[in-house]
Structure formats: structure tokens, C-alpha cells
Image (cartoon, rainbow, N blue to C red; front, side):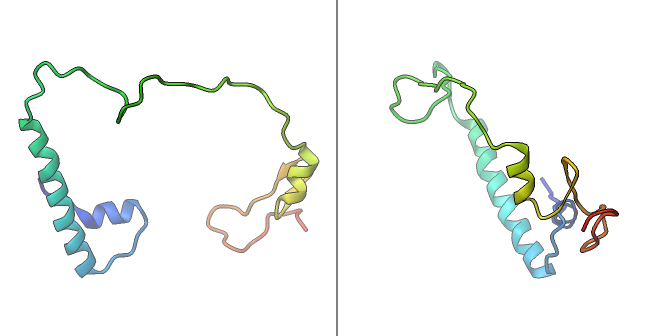
Length: 102
């Protein structure tokens, strides 16, 4: 399987040298080769599992509501706010504050 490392790097917004892309391409081919080798493993009669190791029982904590920070505390921690909302720069306007924020 051929992987377009340049395309993957662009999707991840990474700038990679040609040398690095070549090395990563070889690494990815090797990894996929190992994964492909798993297709030949005989799993006949093997029970499916959702855990690793010798864990006998899955214990989940109760999902309980707990008090959190109030709005004023949260907004006080924000770099910029406007009324009851966080204030963030427009996309593509790095370093530019939104209108109305001080």
C-alpha cells in the first residue's frame, strides 16, 4: 500500500523536509506490513475481549454531578471576554483582538 506522506502532512498542517517525508513513508510501510501480518493469525476459537491483562472485573465510577466553577470565575481566567462570553480572535486574524474587547 502506498501512502502519500505529503498529503497526510498537509492534512495535519505539518511542514516536513523531503528527507523526513521519505523516512516517515518507509516507517508507515513497515508498520502497515506488521498490521497486515495479523491477517494470517489463527484466531479460531479465541474469545473476543475488551481488556488487556488479568483484570477480572471492570469497575466504573458513578457519574455524579459535582459543583464546578461559576461563570465569573471562569471568565476571570480567560485572556479576553465580552459580557458573559469568551472573546476569541477571528480565524486567520492571529494576534488581532475581536471588536469591542479591551
